[in-house]
Image 1 (cartoon, rainbow, N blue to C red):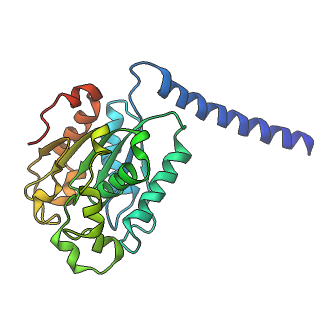
Image 2 (image 1 turned 90 degrees about the vertical axis):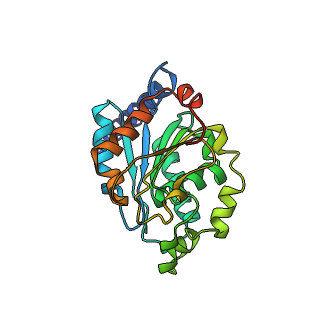
Image 3 (image 1 turned 60 degrees about the vertical axis):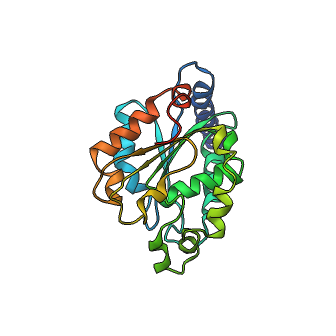
Length: 235
């Protein structure tokens, strides 16, 4: 029994050391790219980000994908953002900075974490993909909590958009498609800070499925943060 307990302790200690060692490399080795956390959209799961995760892996980037539960709009975006904060705390060391990528509703979850829950101290770069940054008229079709918060001029969105100071502390890029039929109007995905880049994709879900937007996101994440800081602020 004593030998079994000893082996379990050694195995756990080895796992902890391995995780800490990997995080230390990410923090301390010059030129080491940030690890990436992907946040899915409404009525979806981490599986929906698999193609983007695979595309990033081709560039040698390590990406994680969170499962927001429930992700169907039943609970508030603030509650989902708390899940994101807790996930970062559990999967990344306290000193490690990361890149965040949020698709659709996931972009708002990322923003709330950064702007309201202290995430700006953990995040170097935020990429939103077809996020309803100023709401979508389609959200009026549901009375679920998160959907009401995604309506244009909702209290939730006004709280985020009236003070973007925390976003100005990090690098921000928003990808959007003028042909979006989920984010209505499509220009609602644009932000007043950072870089806004249109990608002419025919439908909202294709922004995380088709080659062109996946390549665009991967390219943005491959750039040094300082280079993005010098880019054009608004398109």
